[in-house]
Length: 420
Image (cartoon, rainbow, N blue to C red):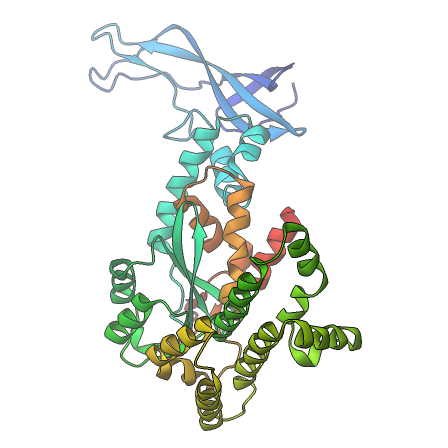
């Protein structure tokens, strides 16, 4: 029979199809007599034993090897022995090459899909993945970013931290929680932490305290989208105050017709939208005022210099009315609490503050949807150890030392789209 297996020590003698895949029957080719390790005398054949092992798919079908091995017995001490098969995995009833295939694919596809392709149990795929992840934790190291981005995402039942290299557009790390203790541990263990010059993050206080303590050379800058988002939320609050006075039908019609246009920047409004905005000024003046404050706050970031931006904020704050617009007044307090970090935007050597980190938020969410029930650890590994995405941007230092910056975010996004 043609050797379909190409495995040392056995030869196939039959193949047949079952409902769950192909069964390949093989026998062991024993060339030498067995010697008892204790008595040092030849052992004699003592029947045979059949065992089944999973192997790599063949003809797009899962494969099970049914291997018949002779047993040997020592006439003196009664010790039994079986011929060892070097191609078998030490921990599982599977070939080493099948385990290798699962290791290569388990972080790029769902466990269930991989189990169906290979014919092994989902828990087996999961266990192989966990072993791989433990190895990767010990062996994979990424270059510490000079410009670091930090953001958070609600993932697998809790808020997690995603950390990026904004210089190279790569993922650097992911933390299970965004608490002060987790951040302190991360920054304390960070190699070459003196290299970090800038950290771009949101308004979360744990970030601020941890960075000040553990990154002595880093300057903190608050992510622009998180700041201007407060103005949008202030406008939304004014809309809600007005909407409670309307019937359900009027609220729906209002949202469909004009509410959405107030979220746009003034310079992006079409001629028809400008006319609609003029109607809002006549009929709902309080909303028009909120829109104008939202726009003038956005305009602060249009200022080319830091001092001009600070003066624009001061003027914006002083124009707030004594009555009403409470959400915008709360903004003033928050901005003063983070004043230096917010206006560090104009000192930073980059303007794309944390866009890549925020764009990355979709990746673990999609991984979570692809494999519902995945633990945080698995989702983290699927994001952080993608083999193809890690190839982009890696290089070598002098002396041929390999340098890795982490998975390249555009490549990760491309992989997600291809999975879809």
